[in-house]
Length: 358
Ligand SMILES: Cc1ncc(COP(=O)(O)O)c(C=O)c1O
Image 1: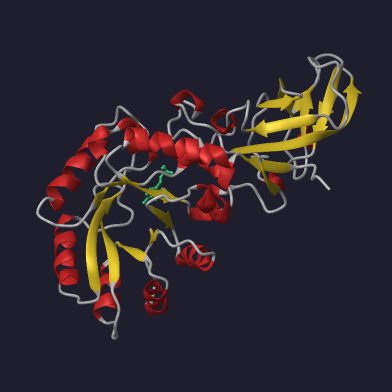
Image 2: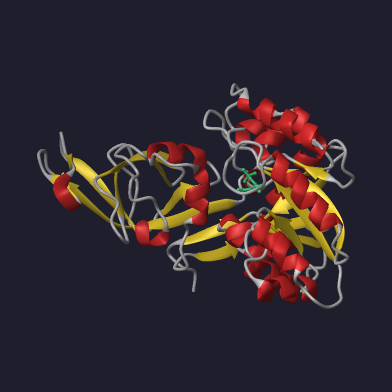
């Protein structure tokens, strides 16, 4: 039985987007970022679609273990590293690479008894002020880790705070600080996320770490993935489940936030915030009915939204509706919902069945 509300994944688009990364960062190895359930697309589906990518990264260890158990044997990095001694053991057991960002993690490695080899990424805080060591602490941590027989390789990384703003000089400052700090160390370097890959060629070092662009989505507010030559992976679909006519002056939905200025055909679509459609999508947010744009009217409710069908006299109950994806950029919906497209794709809920594009 085909579900009424579902997402379709174009997994060939993942390869297309990966080729785009390879074209731009031709000399770099690629660590594909597939954390948070592959940015809401499905961890294992995306991992499979990535084929023989050099490495994959997730935020927390549980997703890394899931990938290993499912048979993925590429290099796997965990961006938040380990949180305690038990998790550290799992890094050895599952051959995972840890991002080391705080002194407590260095201590856990120093205090671990037993055999094994661990490959790590030491993280410099070059200005994000979230995870990572500042320069002096970075040097100290490097020195301590270098003395640990368990540590086989120390690679070096940092993360951008604002690379999606192409005019923000802070990004070049972060790149310079990173290069200056690591210049005397061996080990491979990694700086660039999607925005770094697309906008900051100085950030293209040994490894790049694309996330959002692999899903065909732009990291920049002013451009869509399509404009950057990317293809959207996720399309979110539903159906009209009712159509009614309301008279001038009548309101639609909770709190009556939209009132008809004339007799209006209102379409009810089976998608709501419980599916991950943004509750804050404004009146006027575009929705495709039969491939034609119509505006959202009234409030988004848990299971439904309402649209103005006045321009579509032929629309019928059960006609197909696209919320985002092919034909309607998720970046555009994000603007109408005062958010970023990352939150929209990550927020699709379990109620929405995910199907592969045939
Ligand atoms: C450390 C790190 N690297 C790379 C990425 C990928 O970023 P993006 O999805 O913007 O390409 C992320 C995502 O948040 C990250 O935390």
